[in-house]
Length: 111
Image (cartoon, rainbow, N blue to C red; front, top):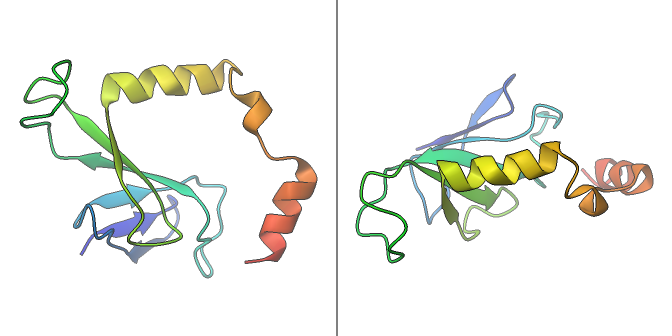
């Protein structure tokens, strides 16, 4: 069994497609009960026989999923790829996708 944490509280959690990983979500999310509408990340096993030639064996990988459903698909990215994406987020390149305050309040009201 893996886990899911927001940095303050940890609960048992497993994704059927990537069992036994320790998943992390944003610390801004509540855990009483845990808010089930978040992107989650986990350190994944190193790449082996990856289908894309640019991912050699031994590349450190990150698993990305959605915690609403433990059977949600899992996307695997190299740490270099996810780091480039995070840089774009920090630099505001994806601000157009952020929820408005009204959307955040509505989401909080449904949990």
